[in-house]
Amino acid sequence: MRVWGSDGRELFHRPPEDVELQRDVALTPDGAMVLWLADRVVHAHTLVDGQERYTLRANNPAPREPDLWADSFALSPDGGTVAIAYHDTTIRLFRTVDGELVEQLGQPLAVDSFPKASDVERMRYAPDGRRIVVSVADGSVATWDLATKAVVHRFEPGLGAEPIIAVSEDAIACVGSEVRIHGLADGKERLRFSPRGAVPHTAAFTPDGERLLVGSETGPALLSVYDVKRGTLVGLRRGPLHTAAAVFVADDGTVHAAVGNALLRWQPGAERHAPSDSPTSATRAVVFTADGKSLLAGGDDGEVWQWDLASKARVGRFAVDDADRGVNAIFDRDDWKTASVAPVRAIVPFGDRLVTVHASGSTRTWSLATRQVTDGAIVQRYAAMGAVRHGDHILIAGRDDEGDSIKIWDPRRRETEQRLDLTYRNLALTPVLRPDGEELAIDDGGTLRFWDLRRRAPVASLEPEHAVGSTALAYAPDGSRFVNGDGYGFLRLWDLKTRTELRHRLDREEGGWASAAFTPDGASLVAGKLRGGGLLVLDATTLEPRRRLEGHAGAVGAIVVSQD
Image (cartoon, rainbow, N blue to C red; front, side, top):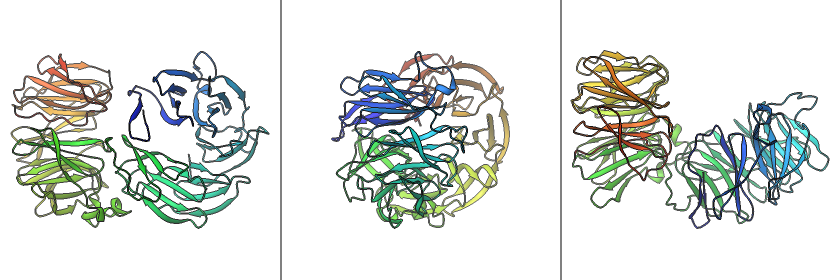
């Protein structure tokens, strides 16, 4: 978790940890403290020194009973009180300054018509601080009056489980497949309309209560702005192709949103967010150019960046034109120009060109000299996971209505030549090629499968013990050995001639393995972890660590090793 100042400086950073749940977060109005929910407990840290001030629990020591887990929390508008909803359907109020329990509000969610409530998924204070509105996992929304200690009303907006909520001075917005505006005082529905764009993830009213901002899970229209009296779309706030995890509107109308690994900011009335030096996209694909002078990296924002290896400077950007970023771009599978804004899953160099393969099933061909698009196509109704080059073809792993498969795609003729079917519907990896290009390997539901690409037929399979599905695959340079790593921390080395496991190591620190690559001499293996930026150089025979490469943060999504 990170906290930034309004000038873009990072004020607080909590490194990734193995926590069960980390979602709700709040800053005190004076900016002195940050509170968040993790592992069913609310934590409070001071921003000056980054030290933990206290933890808020239903009792002390930490509760072991599930009924005393914290489900959600909200900070009062004046910052003086923290309200926490617990799994036993009680709401408890704590003093923000010292974390002392002030009051327990009984079981406001266990009323006659709802004898036992489900988890509280979201909790919001009304702007006047006198009422609390909660969204419950059973699909209902309830308003609790803090003065009378009674439920004012409870209704089911009909949006399914866990509706998203936002609260203004006189209204409650319930967001799901539809947006429904209810009165804060009586709970009666006033208006309903359909949101535009991708699946909603978060919502917030402007301070005057006249506009509602809805953040989407993915899509170039990151935030949609609606007039809550007429139910009409009045504006967009565009950003990278990432989930808008939280949105906040300041008193001056400035919009802030936590998106991917960045905090984005829009000035009042602006459609494009202000520039940010923070990364706005998880990197999914990394390759060297044919001359070995540049590195290309693409990620979830649908763009590719080019770095010069000599100067270590960013020298170019392969980006979707602004004209292509329509509000429904990610959904338009009939037009490659707009469909290609989906996340990059692979970068495939072809001499003076490169082809990007996107999660939407689209491809784009770019000129390396001009960084402009020269061609594109749609692999119809195909959700791509990854791809590699094989001669003049691209092998694209993905999923469609018929199941998981690898499609042998001809980018010049824009057609699939052959389909290699897989068994399970849990494919999550890019296929890997043996260095001589004659064999392909991929994880198929925990089974390692190998294809002879000349005959385009399966040749062998390996069954790792306690297989859970691989998250990292790599061939040795001579093709005699193979490595697979999984999310539980197992890294296995195989002899491909005898089809036997040579050895394995179990390393659960920083999660499992996310990526792997052999050095060109085959003596070392570079392996990246799922969390914490762990990047280890291992002996390729014993799998014992030789050294750790520092400086990376987060999951190591892709590794490529140069020839030297």
